[in-house]
Amino acid sequence: MGDMFPRGRTAIAGLATFGVGETPGYSSMELTAKAALLAVEDAGLTLPEVDALFICQPDDFFAGLSFAEYLGLQPRYTDNNRTGGSAFMSHMASAALMLEAGYIDCALIAYGSNQRSNGGKLATKITSNAWDAPYAPLFPLTSYALAAARHMHEFGTTREDLAAVALAARAWANTNPEAFAKGPLTMEDCLSARMISTPISVRDCCLVTDGAAAIVMTRTDRARDLAAAPVPLLGAAAATWWNSVAQSKDVTVTAAKESGARAMAMAGVTPSDIQTAQLYDAFTINTVLFLEDLGFCPKGEGGRFVSSGAIAPGGSLPVNTNGGGLSCCHPGMYGLFAVIEAARQIRGTAANQLPGIDLALAHGNGGTLSSQATVILGSMATV
Image (cartoon, rainbow, N blue to C red; front, top):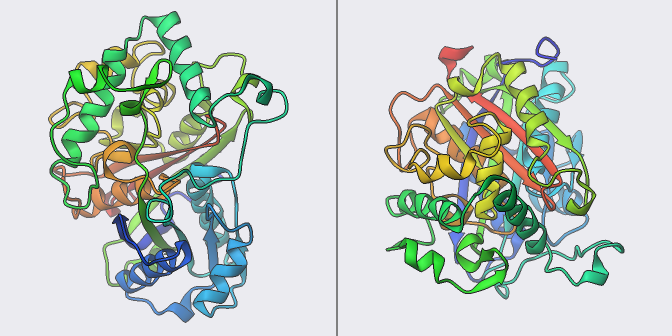
C-alpha cells in the first residue's frame, strides 16, 4: 500500500480560512469562495490555473456544480463527496492520485458554512435511518453518547476524562486569536453543564459557528517554486465500516483504526513519530476514541491519557492546537480546518506554534463515527 501512494510527490501549496466565528451577511457559498480565493492567492497562483474542484457543502446537494459556476471555472474534474467531516481528507487522497497521474495539475479543496448566522442550528437534512428512528435518538448526538456510555462501562472512563478534552481545547483556544470560544472553563463548569444525551452534556459538544477553509494542492516539484512553503502529503487513507453506529460490532472501536494504520504505512511513520495531531472533535468522546484507534495510546486508556494532560499545552502530544471543534470553530464540518492547522504547524505559521514540527496528522470523522479518514503531512525535510 505504501508503495502505491505517491508519498511526498504532491503538496499543499496554499491555504486559508475565512469568516471563522460569526460572519453575518454571507451565504455559505460566499464564505467558501472567499476562502478559496485567499488560498489560491496564498499559493501565488491565479484562479484559472485551478483545474479540479473538491467540495462538500452542508446545504447544497449540487455544490460541485454551484462552486464551479460561482468561481467562473470549467474544471476538468469536480468532486462533491458527501461523507461528512471526513470528506476533505478523502478529497486530498483523490487529488494526490490524480496529480501524480497527470490527470489534473492544480486542485482546490474548499468548504464553508454560515450555520451560526443563519439560524445557529446544525445545517443538515440527514436524519436517523428507519431502524434507529423509532427510538427517537437526537441526530447525531445520541450515537456519540452511546459510544461514550459503552466506553465508560467497559474501560472505566469518566465524565472527568471527557471534560479534560474540553479543557485542553479551551486552553489552546485561549491563545488563538481566530478561536471563537475563549475565556475561563473549569472542571466544575463541565461537570455541572446541562445534560443533553447521557453522558454527553453541552460542554462535550462542538461549537456552532460560521467559517470557511480552503487548500490548494499541486505536485511538489511545482509547489517548490510557488509563493508559500509547500507541505507535502505523505499518506492519506479512508475507511468506512457502517453508516448507523447501531450497526457496529463494538462502538468503542472506529474505522480510524484502519485509516490511520494505512495512512501511516504510506508515510512510513508510526504514531510515536507524529509530533502533533489534529483530530475531529465534534464531541469529547471522539478525541478519546481516535487517540486510541490511531495508536497514540492503548484501547481503553484514552480517558486516562487525556486526563494526564498529554494533549493540552505542554503535553507530550499536542492535540487540536487551534482549539478544535470544541473551542475554535465548527461550521457544520470541521475536517478541513484540522488539515489547515496541521499544515500551519509544519509551515511555522500557527497561532500556537510548536517548535520544529516536521510530521503532523489530521483526522476527519463523518456521520455517526461512520466514515474515517487520516492524512499525514510533512515538511520538505521529510521528502
